Image (cartoon, rainbow, N blue to C red; front, side, top):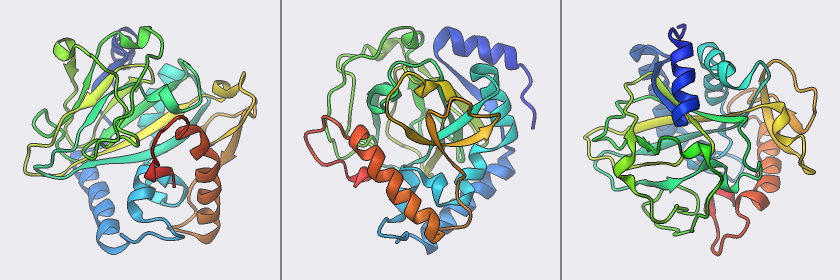
Length: 284
């Protein structure tokens, strides 16, 4: 499906730091993707290579699960992200955020870029795709408009058990009376800037809330950084070579992909868990 009104969504994004309600899959296609994810939950929950399925769902699943790599390569998603970041695109991570029906899991106010080791770059965008009805009642995302225009701010780690973030990190003292909701129907997408304050509430609905977060970056993000990180080239070229380019999963839990997964996890964990006072299980 093509995105019409691309200029309007781009204007919203640059002004507010986010845009919501862009349709990228039909409801039937979204249901098919959901079915495939839930099939994995039913039949491959134990995962592989010493990592359970939940860890793959939350950290770099595109390296070992072809479905997640293919979602990240969806043409209309790439077309939209290209209007924001330009013609050369890489995927840094693909994650699933699932809140069970009538659960109290939340995501606290935070900025994505805080612990990623990329600095305050403008060249990262998260595409968040709904595979179920992500209504206000179901705990959709909230955004603080214009917050992306500032710098990264201090976060505090809570390690709260009901917080879906790896260390329960949160920005203290946010006045959420100014926040805007971003509800999504199945197959719709939102986009948000890496410095945009955002959060989400508990799922008070009777259905699971399922979303896929794809983190897109440009080759230039690591241009001025001394170390390297891993990313999947999905459009254009990476002439800077600041990233270690990976191809994405060749088949479900292929042994070579599992070895790469463990390598990437080992290298990234030092950055993602830096400064944490407790163990961050997702990166273990």
